[in-house]
Length: 604
Image (cartoon, rainbow, N blue to C red; front, side, top):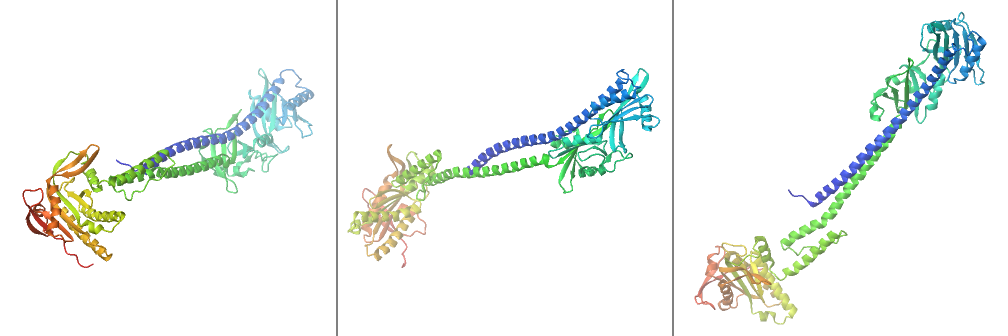
């Protein structure tokens, strides 16, 4: 399996960025959410706990003072039969209990004294209680005489005083003898004052009696409308708080998602403007000596949700920054991969020896990429210079075939020689630079035809060219492409002579010799200077056939002479004319010679 550099780098870098940032964002979001949720829930808990503690303190103080008065009836600290002494003691007990509204002390007969806290002037009111004239006193005395333990009276509204009170009663006993009772009452208005003091910061605390009646609320002051002796407390449906009026229709919410715990019940409701609020109640009524009360609080949803919304916004912002970081990682990966990709493309071009269109790698601020570009560019310059002095086609074939460094071996090879006839008249009058330009142009024509037909240029010898077929790539019939290359050279010379004639230049005439046979092929030379070349008698015969053209047709524009061995490998589409046997220099036996016939060119 292979991978591309840019997506791989982008994926790896992006994955690390994503993993790191997402982990940090997740931890930070969860921690912040937990902290904010805990703060919101803690605020609600503290408010409700504070109200419960204040309410319990009120109740404890009243209970303790009531029991103290009851104990005093049998303690001998005053004469219970003396109304003046009884009134004085009750006055002191009320003064020591600022939470209380009134203190009542009754003897076993049902008669006694009631001291009531007055208005803001600080004047206390004392009232004599007679059982015969006060049915409530008679009933209270009868109940106390039947109960050895203290007890709370139900919440009651006194229309005469316009007060709704909670009363704690403590019977006084001396052994089995009932001495009387003490009763201390507290106005529920006082509980509403406490609720008002503890409410704030967007939260309202209140107290329910049971689940349907409002006992205390910051909005309650005095005796609210609708309260009477038959209806001692305000029903939630008539509460001065619109959120509590609609409480019965509120939707239940899981409190644990706001870290409130299972000890609470949580409900969602809406105000008149349609904004969301939460109402939280203690799940179990607080039992205070048999008195069922439920502490509650309500607050705007933003108290605990707005910080979470901010955390969500921060999380979204973090994700946006993360997305930007990922895009940046992709751009960085592309920036890093671009020179590497160009180097890879350049390396493939180098492998093909296609250096003409090879562009240098750009510089970089990254040291490693800068070194890569410098090294690659220096290599390209060196290779371009190197390829000017070695046959590019040969090197490419050697690399492609894997024949680099192989030992010389015998191959069936076709060899071609070319030479300009009468080079001196052609170059007469040319400067050195013009002569070099002429030779280069001529060799380019010949070299293009050779390479186009799969041949390998072995060497340039002045204006002559030596090329071969069948190595390093083995060919079954190397004569056919070699003959086609000779015919293409003849056509190129003919076209070029037409151009020269139009410019008033003398024509170029060319001799070509072809032979095929066994040759030694491979690296020949000293270790410091090696040539991949061919050696053997086949080379000599090809060279002699080229020279023989001077005798066969000295005035021909291009004459192509080949051996009979070459002719035997040619296809029928390649015409030739037999010239018989000819003796050539260096050979004892005559050589059967043919002349390849280039097709006639029409007018241009």
